[in-house]
Length: 518
Image: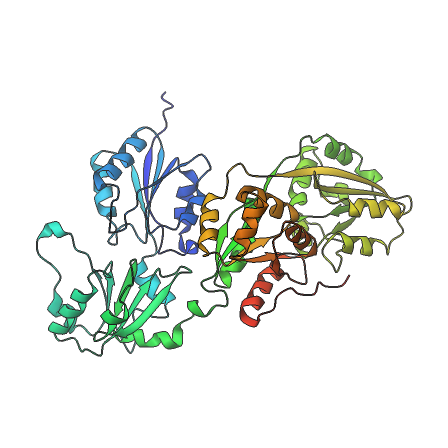
């Protein structure tokens, strides 16, 4: 019986730009990929869903300049699938809406290669929605017509029925029509569409770079002088609703590019918070979490859990590996029933609840000093305390607890290391001055950032072109020691508070907050 792997091609719609608009099925396909062929209009952030080993091939179709020939793209799809690979063709918007997905599906089908089409959110609907323009409206537009603004020149003549388009009272949506806008306007006016008809041109819709220009058929060409693709053009009375319904561009961090230096495993929550405020989070992990060099110390502590009175977690990252190792020892949460459990902050306490555990102690200040103050309210003389944490961390907490009479065992449950890859792309964007904020959530993210970016002097030059935000005073002190001036710092050491502090900085000018008292 043959064990040869069967290849397949997934034609996946990437959506219009906002990575949150990728479908669940599209994400599932990316997670299986051996190779991803992606377009200019597909947000590169979506490539993070593909496995690390997956090959990423840019086939940049952008309607101008040089790009991969369609026949070569078809050849890659077919040969890679025939070699037994899972091939994802990641296409902007929807594969079958002006995206040559039909041609690619034809080629794959003709070659006898299995394929699946995964529809995407088309820019024809999503971009107007993000600009505050409903494409249909009960009193303003009962129909919508989607038209290509860039017909295949090999056809020799247009097949667009301009008289009918001009006569309709519904919404007209032109895709890829920025370069041909003067012609589009001229034809609609010639066929009798009123010159005062509202028009919107929306560039990079659904992304932080979104820009909308509003006018009429009479003046939209002049108003959009210098505007570049990709742009969706909306013609019709529904454009008037933008003033009332423009929700996306009014979010407090709209248009801000914010760098997240947390480890990839941790970055999701913070990125989602920033996105909800309208920012574009840019993942640039400067730390990577790996297992400790040995599990021996933790395994021994788990064997002797009955001798401990306290179990203290100083980071949310320590909980999962501790619980996994507990299970590895064929034990469960019942082994922790006699322990008092401390959590450094609310996020760590929340993570404990996933395992059916409730923290007995959460300090009011979410750092080692706060835990020391909270533990000082308890008589620790003769008690044993177990602290599962990073292999390298501040010694303040164990030292202070020992001074209070406790026997403290510190065991490593993970290590943080510097990623092997550099930050070349981020470096270029920092040099160009297009990054608004660089965030740091630990001292190690700062130190590794400085090393990956090319040293202290280079980091200081780049910091002069952006804003530095730190989660708390310890991290801020490390940044200052490296010559990075800290502008934003919340009063609490949480990513929620850090996101809110960035919002306050841009909406109210609030810079470094006063830390919460212990």
